[in-house]
Image (cartoon, rainbow, N blue to C red; front, side):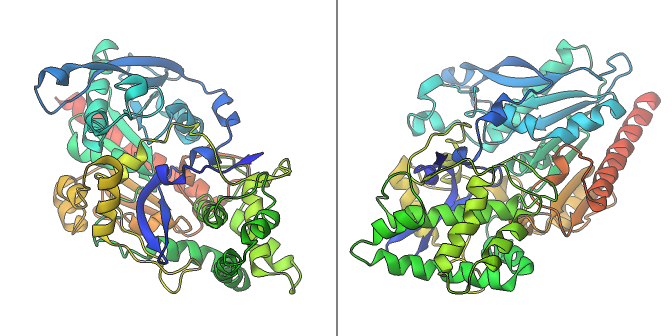
Length: 498
């Protein structure tokens, strides 16, 4: 059965109101990435890494007795191409909100370029995700344990682990470059700013570091998703836009749930019409994010340019078919491209990729306001800090700090600030990725570079190269390699002079 999780609200960035009676979730960066949407066979994919565990302390920023509690943080290493004697570089992936194996499988770019640079590859798992649980099975028990889950602690984890690793490997002179995609890309960028003495550069792919406060228009994410579908087919966009009203109309019927269950070919009768809405909503959002130019299975197995393929399905159906049935047929491509599912389970599911901690982060520091404008193909919606805060208070007993990220890491007037303060950073974005609107899209200086592709999707540049890659993607990766090469040349030159 195709699984769709009833725990969709556990992977939200934040919550916005849609209509008067229901809440709609907004999807996390990236990653990405609902646990229910990634087939478990991805985890079985062989990756060329050895697994290690580092004794990490619980709290880097206080000296309370419990601060020194140790948990074991998972990290992966590939030393196949590393020239340790020559001070070969260390490429570190700053882990996202999930199992680190999953990100290692889907970041083939680092493996592809490691031979050229004779680099050691390290993928570090984010605390409170995957196997890196500070309190074991009780890590998500309450705010008392989850209080140690935040981006600042994660960055400090990476810094401590990297320093220890270099010391243990007797490689103090090896330069470190950090890589990350989506939330991991945000962490990579922030790591370079916070720990410039540890990392000489950062490659941040699809990193929406400007998606906070009022830096980026709140409607930009869903406007971008809608534009992707509109560019593929205006009729497709109109059909999806009109399908929500048809679904709402069905929900008013006495046998509405029965009708919706039948139309959506559910394995079990639905308990809520909103399960069908979420199922459609998520399919369209994630397909826009992973609108890759080649076949891929990061989220689900999908064809090349899946947005276009969805629209071909909609445009190819009879004119007399309802908009809702057309939207269902298109969304089915996302959940059943392999044609192996006989029915769909829209309710129920498990967190197979360990993403459950993101709802805490969204309710504390990762507050990214989003709305749906009238131009969106989704129902219009608004965002209220007050309502959001009340929801988080009810769920966790804590209130969000909606302006903390811009206080801690900046964001406003980023061009002026980083032009005088930062260096050696790549921000790569594809404009078909809705998260790109919250990214850095213009060069800030000669060494803080924005690489923007019109047809790129969510951290597509970090995927393994294939024989079917388009020229623009090949060129983008070549640019990234050339910039990294320049960073390393400058580092080794300075090293010889000292």
